[in-house]
Length: 409
Image (tube, rainbow, N blue to C red):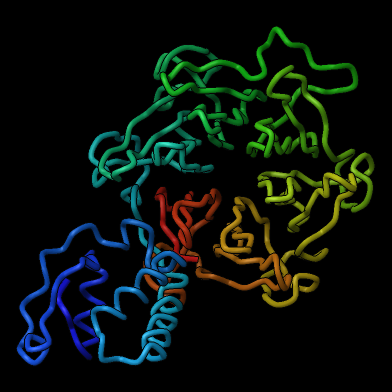
């Protein structure tokens, strides 16, 4: 690695280009000589794990300490902190040409049609539901190609089979287990579907396993995620319930919810109004986006109780304390850096709910539109799905813009 003495700009640019901290012998006499050009760029840290991540900040501190040895450590820390915050709220489009279509192949030319839910599988492929085209798409881990792994473009139905032989009807929710199986909330068919890594599509739970007495069939299943034990959780929107499919017995049970409405309390009497997405925290509790109530709810599994984390009785757009902050039809949610990141659908924003101090902040977005840029420039048009991509980075399905976006949070 070249030494940059006090030249911070050159050092930071080298860091972003992927220069590495290599054990290179540097003679004292050489420090007084003009520096040679840094080595050719390697793998950019932006593509590797994101400059807005804690990992990038730590690496940057180490890099600058060695690249600029004449600078005090305190200065390096200040520079790194400012660098980190300068990337919060930045967005970048990684797929979609902002036109309606269904074209696989080169990522630069691929098109989608109202993408909704999104996840990353164990191999780092990006999987998302292409709602209007009734199929499931995949972006390769190296972000170079897009392909269809389930369903045929524009062909709705309910057929199990392999790849494009299968049929879906307005698929929405999507998640992956540790083995690379993809679970899909097949909204229009009122079913849950499973896609194996080999591309085989089946109904889940198997149709040979009946619903237990007292458990109604799914109605408009919207969101899916895995719990800490490997069971599948479902936001059963039109039944206004949170359901579970046991990974061993395939039995369906209701975790929380009764009739449509809004009510906290015991899981058997609590009420939701079209729960759409859900995520499990490290304690095994379930956080739910309650769409028609414009609230974020939490199911405390040990206490068997539902509480409200954020949102009020009135939909709106205001930051601040979670008890007074307003949301407007929140949809996708994921947990990143001790915060819940929210796709605030009708506010066209990405919001952050701190799980430490219970404050709500706007990360980026606001005015409806289609603009990449920093937190003040970014525009979305109906952000719906959201998932973790790398530390400090989430992926967002910008549905009405027909794109997949990357956001530094």
